Amino acid sequence: MDIKILALSVGVLVAAGLAGLLAHWLIFNALGRVAARTETDLDDRLVARCRGPARLIIPLLAVSFAGPLVKLPPKLASGLTHALSITLIIAVTWLFLKVAGAIEEWILARYTVDVVDNLQARKIHTQVRFFRRVVIVIIAVITLAAILMTFKQVRQVGTSILASAGVLGIIVGMAAQRTISNLLAGIQVVVTQPIRLDDVVIVEGEWGRIEEITLTYVVVRIWDLRRLVLPITYFIEKPFQNWTRVSADILGTVFIYTDYTIPVQELREELNRILEASPLWDGKAAGLLVTNAKETTLELRALMSAPDASKAWGLRCHVREKLVEFVQKNYPDSLPRVRAELEREGGRGAV
Image (cartoon, rainbow, N blue to C red; front, side, top):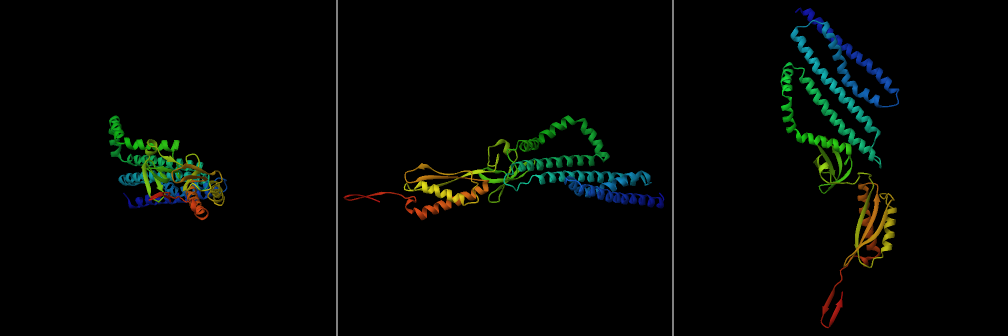
């Protein structure tokens, strides 16, 4: 082939690519101005996120349209067409992932979890993040299949595979039974929502918060910053405690033990003073009752409410400390004591 014709053909393709870059700049500048004038910020996010993939897609399309206009050696033309096809598939996949990310970001921005009553927000966060992962997996599988189908040898193998699809489906189904079970369990968890992101749960005897929900497992951040990783089927098949299933507020209890001589009413009034002075108390519930009378002590239960589990823990520790301090300071004779009788010659002596 003549070198001049080859050089001219390459020049046409390069010019088409540069024209595509110019078109990209013009299009996205116009889209940016239009998005800036709208009330919603979704279009701003889409324009910002899609700018990168489009910078690759538009020049690729321009080069593809210019391909039939140039004369290249058959092998070079075939290789170039194949490379353009694979690159375009990857670029379109990149675009879809960016669109999914922009939509997720837009939805999550409307439902913030850094508020006191964040139940609805945590529902939305759990569903959106899970289904985005499902979308990513689907897009990845379709992209891989599309790239493989650009190869002639793979298409020929694909025809043979389709001929025995029934047997292959049975084999794959048996091999992927556990994976499919986890995926279906994940969808069930997200739809029915026995757990949500940031829920306070008790699992395997550990107190923690739901930190991450994936397609196959759940990560629980335990109070001491350890991570407990459980299969997602655990939350379908086994019982567990969810302290924030309906609302975040929770009741806390403190037990103290004193002598029978303690003036309960004064201790009850002291509890009210402690709670009223504490910012951790939400003002909904408070009380002190004698819940048991043992041989040597009275069991007193202080009840209090808090807006969430973390504050309830802090409030319980604070109340326990202050009540014990009150008894020590004002009624030291009412601290738990052991009574005994000693026998001696000539009579008994009480101690």
